[in-house]
Amino acid sequence: MKPLVLLAILALAPRFSETNSHASAKRGAEQYKRGQYDAAVKSFADAATLQPTPQNSFNLGTAQIAAGKRAEGSNTLEKAMAEPSLQAETLYNRGNSALASKAYEHAVRDYSEALKLRPADAQAKRNLEIALNRLQSMQRSRGSQPQQQPGAPQPKQQQESQSNQQRDQKQQDADTEALLRSVQQQEQEELARMKKARGESARIGW
Image 1 (tube, rainbow, N blue to C red):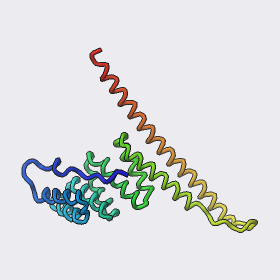
Image 2 (image 1 turned 120 degrees about the vertical axis):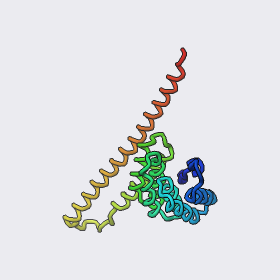
Image 3 (image 1 turned 90 degrees about the vertical axis):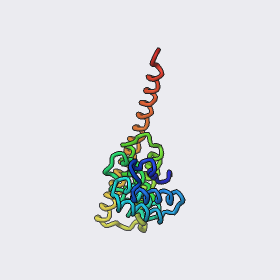
Image 4 (image 1 turned 30 degrees about the vertical axis):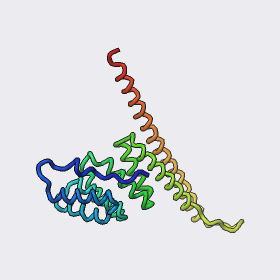
């Protein structure tokens, strides 16, 4: 699984003067690169307090997830969604957090939304497949019932409950398979468009 994505602090710095917020963000980026995630959380939190921007929220949330504070990090990342250019990376990072927390339904949702914004993202597609497989395995495990003694009658209510569970699980399995097929189709269509664009470019001047 591709590691969490952190924004390039220096590349997005203001041109006029280095503020205290930027200094804290720069320090946080350096700490993050060294694997000092708790320290990075503090630095990014200082930056976000001084200048509450989507970028600072993105970096703070990413550092919180890396430090093991997944629920807190996911909530912080929500603030970064206000910036359209950050949405795909935000959804990807939040999906990674959900996948690591075994919140597979949330992971599937976030990876799917990330792929809608960036269909050619191979890592997001791969992580979606992992999340779907684990979700299906979990659903099958939950759906299994302890076997009764042969010939023992089952109460009607229990039979109906089991039947409903099996029907719901089949529907969920069908939904997840359809989702994966849709993502794969989007990827194929994107590849076809890229090939077509390359072909048209090559024909210029013929």
